[in-house]
Image (cartoon, rainbow, N blue to C red):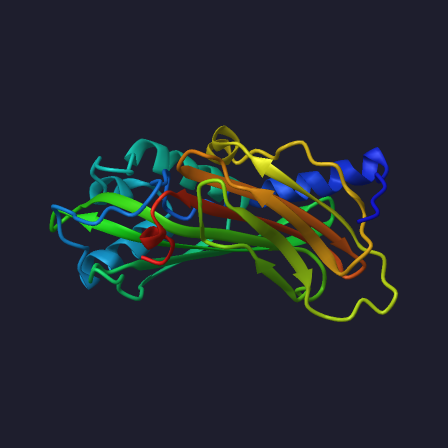
Length: 265
């Protein structure tokens, strides 16, 4: 794909916009290489899920602190820190917590969504992020979690540019797969620029932007074929797309597993 670098000042502004949405923390703080097949504790009740939504949307951390308990994949202190950071970037952030589709082994899942806005360099950016996970409880507290998928979109412009984020939720170790962010409408001669970069676990935790070079694109979106690592874990990708109608920043976390059964739990 033909690509040429943009000016430094233009790139700096766009990267600042991407930083606002990178990581898009909703709840999960750690991922599992696969999906555990057995759990010693029950899933959270509808009452507990409602309490979680209320706690995430509260002005302070008191309710969230009372609801959380350290356990597999769940660090209450890190969760509070990331929630506070998100609140700083998106003061009107709003969470929704809903029961999801059960897994094949019968365990329930939880869908979390967060939305919010931020004004940056005179432009309003709108965040939409989501996670699907298995949450564990001891009856009155959240006591553990396994993250199944996670993605975010951050868009500017008077109307949301229609895009498709086509990246798998999970892949096998060493597998080649596509990382695509597609503009879901005809370009009609519009010039589009963008870039894709891998995000380190440290950058995800700190909601930091990776170094990313933007270039003019020869097609209607960002397209890249990548290879999963040979060890299980996860990969996170950051994408930035510049269109005359606005800027789109996207992130997507991909689970890397060794067992085909974990691809579609």
